[in-house]
Length: 330
Image (tube, rainbow, N blue to C red; front, side, top):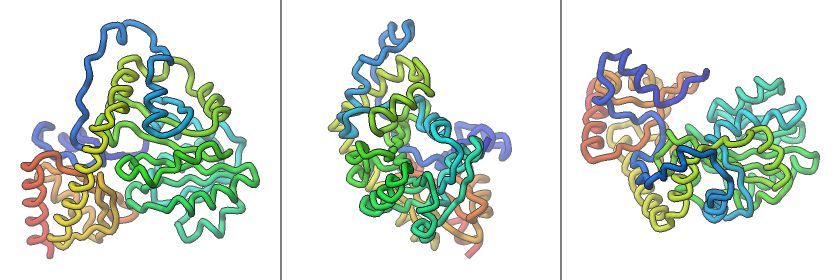
């Protein structure tokens, strides 16, 4: 298992601080969970059905004609490699590590490439995987460039897989409007924007035939009945979506400014997290953890990712930790 953010229980044991006393900024989730609707008893008692309105709500939210619900976009990441014979896969890196790992485990030849290397290697690849906005760097590639890469791949029957887990705050950057093009596959996460990662829900956007093939790999009843009701309610709350976008954007700017005031200006990020490269990354992670503040460390790139504090007291606590770190190590 690869390491991810959110290992709060492990951190609590390691640092000897009880779980309720932690400020967890390690996951990049919106820190304000969406209101949970009333879940009827029948949703728990019966097998889920696919004509309950979830797909329609998702199609309206993403602006597409068809979707495939999955139990978290991680499910799709692991199943996509099964739909191709062994080939050459490019993964624009650094990014969410599960992408490269899933293709490797399925027997494909994986090359992790930088943005500047894509054009050089693209014509030798069968699939290119891009996370946009990227996790953890926050880099947002323009749609025109992604569609150009897709066109080159599609000429040879290749795929462009775009993981848009963090795009909800900048919906204008999504490629959802183009998923009728053969070989363009877009993955969307539910939990990050809605702050409900525990429900395990995601969507795949692509041509109908491709979704049918992937759906056969996912199998029946993959998304639970309660999750389907909750997902439909959240996706249909159009007024709430705009409020969440504005709140997240303001908080993202505030976090970037806060880091900058303490000589820790981020090198990238998006509305839901900020990314900082520093030769003191491991020291910073441990320094904050000793104060009950959990951030995500990336050892390979000597960097940390910080998510958004939820409440004013959390902002104060983070600023106090950053100030103390700056005083100790400046």
